[in-house]
Every structure is written in structure tokens, then in C-alpha cells.
Length: 451
Image 1: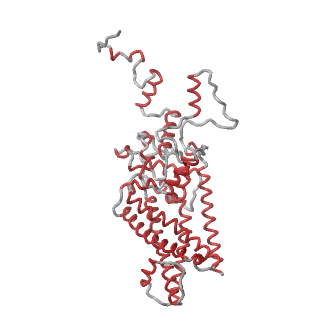
Image 2: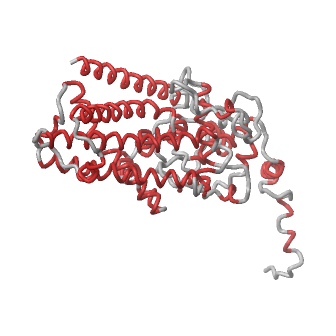
Image 3: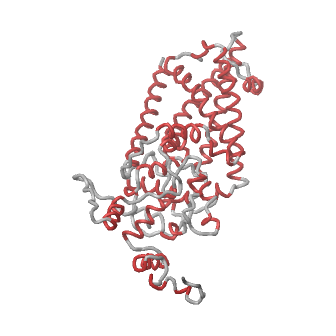
């Protein structure tokens, strides 16, 4: 009875701490500008099913997709067993869902097979990160100590959680055999490994079962509260981020509403520029800091898996430019947490505090220049390769373009070549430094017959 009460207290504290962190993240995301995204619900649901639930974009690279799929499905199915563990922990029951009979047996068998495959997948992922060192997972100014440690912590934790689950099942099988009782469920992997637990001492087996059970559930609670500080938070945020992702063609850029009105007024003197509602501030020209980006762009930052697929396909990055779309998104998250609230008990996401060199920035307390340099932004070719490659539909280009707009429209800080082009467009109606009256000079010596 006491252990049930202790378990209930731990469960309430773990869930409460997670909710507390989620509220902080929500407040951080609400730092962004308002943007209404509520159109085409059916198309959004379809994209949610394909990209988020179906992992559609992961399968552009088959092997990582299969391994990731095993971990993903294992995570979903094992969560069903989690309901049983919590119920048993609170009410003192044992395998409370055993009354489901064949359904329970099938569920446990699938659970065990997936848990075994998860261990294999995690070991392969660890090898890819630490021995073969896949470039996109290890290189880049943003892949600092914390990013590499975070990935390893999660993979090792998943392996340990699965081993604890097997220890619980194996000890339970042995205890049932000793007492000549039939254990509800089917456990193909534990039956295969049962001889590895070489003892028939009931007290020892009960201790192993208890330790395995507690270690597994406490590990899950710790994992739950670690998520907001980790790139693995994408297992939650991927779903809303995909639902609210951009439906328009990727090449279609947004426009600034106030500039649109000004141009319409220039072209049509009778056009009346609508007045803003009382208390509403006009939209800024571009973004200098996180509050100038939309809430969706900030949601992108919390959804990043740090997989590096965006940077891996970036043509600017190919040619040695500073631009890394992954870094832009990770910088946005770091700045958001610096300006807003820290979602975790500790602050692992702040690279600056690790004292390691990175892309040279200024001391400004803003996203632009304080984290992201103009050199990175102007290296972008706006090809949308990063957006297409992202498995969770992050729109890196939109954040890059907003910061570029600020440089051009608020600071006139575009590269020299672009400033010359802007001046020519303004004076000559074309990007070249020639008067409109001289445009046909090139045809003077062509001896074209004019009728």
C-alpha cells in the first residue's frame, strides 16, 4: 500500500513537472507574431497522416528510415504497455490488462519484439554517430558538445529502458514457473533469454522483477521530463508543426502587408489604404529578433530534430559558405529560450555558455547578429532544398527571408551589389545602370530593316 502511494506521488510530480515545462515552451512560442493558419483542414489532416504519422519524408533515405521506423513504432506500442504499468503501480494490481486474453498476448509479443528491435536500432544509431561519424550528424558549427551528448544520452536511455523491461518480464516468467502459475501474455524474447537469469531463489527473482519494473517506469518519467531540453522533443512537436505547415507552393514568398498597400496606392491614386484597428501596431519590415517572427516560425525551432538533412542538401553549404539551415533553426530556439523562459531544469541548449568558438557574432542581444550573421543569410540561394528535405516540414527559408528583409528595409544593409541593383531599379526601372532611353542602343548596328 505504501509503495502504491509513493508511486502515485511520483507519477503526479512527474506529470506536473512536464506540464510546467510545456507551459513555459508555450509562452516562448507565443513571443512570436500572430498568424492565422486555419484553412484547408482536410489537406492539413492528410499531410499530418502522411508526414507525421506515416514518416513519409524519412523514406527518401531507406536505411535510416527503417531504423527510425522501428524506434518510432516501438515508442508508440510501448506506450500502450505504459498504461498497464501505471495502473498496476497505483492500484497494486499485476498485469491488469491480462484479462484481454489473446489480445494481451499479441500485444505483449509485439511489444517484446519491438523492444528487441529498438535495442538493435539504437546500437546502430550509436555506431553511426560515434564510430562511422556520419558527416551530417557530426559536422557543422551548431553541432557542439551538447548536441552530440544529447543524442547519445537518449539512445543509451532507450537501450537501458528496454533492458529493464526484459529484466522485469524474465523474472516474472521464472516466478510464474516456480509457483506453477500461468503468466498472462506471450513473451518470445524473454522466453529466449530466460536461462540467462541463472537463479531460482524467489527473493532474488522478486528483487529483479521489482528493480526492473521501477527502473523502467522511473526511466520513462525521467525521459518525459528530459524531452523539453532535448532535440527529441520533436516526437511531440512534429505533429502540430506538420499540421500547421505551409500549403502554398514552396516558391511563393510572403509579402509585407503595409508595403503591398503602398504599392497599390502608387499604382492607383484612388486606392484607399485601410486603417489599422485601434491598438494594433503596424507590421515591422522583417525580423531582427524572435518576437518579429511568427509563432509558427518559433514552433519550427522547437520541432527541429537536428538530423542535418537540411544542411546536407544546402548548395551554399556544399560550396563552403557559412550557411547551415539547421544552425538558423537551432539559433532561433536558443535565442527564444534566452529571451523567454527555460523549459528545463538546466540550460543545456546555450552554446555560448559552453565557451566554444562558433560563427563570429556580435554582442547584440538579438537573433540577428547576436546569433545569426548577415554573411550566413546572404549565402542562401532560396532554392528551398532545405524545406523539401526536412522530415517534419520546418520552413527554414521563411526565417532566413524575414531576417534578410530587416537588413534591406530597416538598415539598408544589403550587400553592395544588391544595393546598386536596388538603386538601378528605382532610377532606371531595370537592374542595369543604363537609362531606359538607351535600352535599344544595342540594335543600332544590326542593320535591321524598319518598315
